[in-house]
Length: 571
Image 1: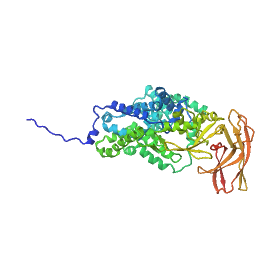
Image 2: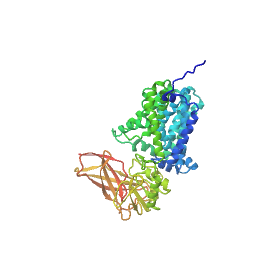
Image 3: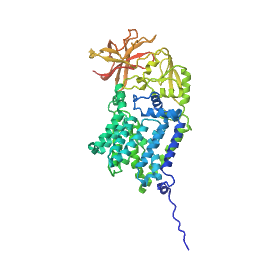
Image 4: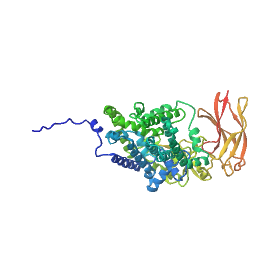
């Protein structure tokens, strides 16, 4: 007589560790694709997405802030689908392709386990960079393509792998300049590459493919290089370091961020992954002493981290850690995604990013503006989102030389001159009307007749040494250079146009005074210049070191700072 033996029921943690059986990788990829297509279709644009859409209206080989790949993606998607889905469509496709590439790197023993899928779903950056469009999205995909090809290149160096490596390098570069860090840390992890001819061939292929962008940079006087190397940086400070560290723990996830320090590399490929992770985190830690580091800038470390994570958490002895550091975050992120997709909480936002209500916001502003262009100084996010949702002209211009945008490169300042323009700012000014929006923002606006501004095409240069007059004033001879192709006339109707001197310390304006009126002067001819003698009073200024800037003030507009700084020691 046969006996039936009852086996003990498996615990939930044992079931999670099992293979996914009838749910292979292809179903996970389909799940990810459908989930994100639904997400992007139900979420309005936010953050810089409107600005990247603005890029896509005129395809070029480069843009002020970034290479062109993000614009190409948006342009192609908008050809296929209207609205938000079109803007984000190819970003979702590339993210799904990246997951497929990632699975190709994994050993068979862990490729199909439930834990592998859950670990991947616990990564905050993976979610964020899939349903929102940033240059980091395609960078994620093509950095992973580089790693897939690089792994094969390490095993088999030939013409095919060399060419593919070069193509992947070029694609990374066209996505975002941070791709160069992947190459740098790869060489540091495997310096033998520098002795291999096929590696140099791949670099040559990448350089040739990237030449059109470099030529664009040369034609435009390297605006991106200047901005990223000087315009975004400031003096060494601890101001942003704490923000960087705390944001990275959240963005990467507490279950992932410690792994490169506890997982050992078994071969040169895994050593390269560790170098990319640790090198990226250290590089941006150092950068945080000079500038604010956005949490998604470390995205190139994400898939290397996930590579170690899926192996680490598939170990039976890591079940407790998996239970506390992975599973709660999977639930949390899906709840967050639901709240972002469906506006269950009115006015929900993350920092300045608003995920619902932009259409109504743009409609309100459009009614106020009528047929007038809307000028929003120092605000590329709002101006581009207004254009996307209203179909009308929104323009931003930046008033300091360290930061400009694509609006200046495309000459949008000229499109406003002489028109009636609605000025909209985040701060109150004389004669402004307050506007409290449905998405919780407060703006101030007024109409400017016969708009005139001087943010681009004019440079102010002190051409003689500064002379101290009994420590009470600075005597400066200032040269006003007109770089435009037409004369500059400072006459602005009934408004006064003046040269201003901004005295600043530690990135704070101490005072900004009008020191000479120029609205009654003759026009400056195209490519011409004029000198102006100025006395800058220093009375009541505390002793110390100051940065002096010169600019132009006209009407209600923010001062246009048009000079490089020079430093004075006032004792």
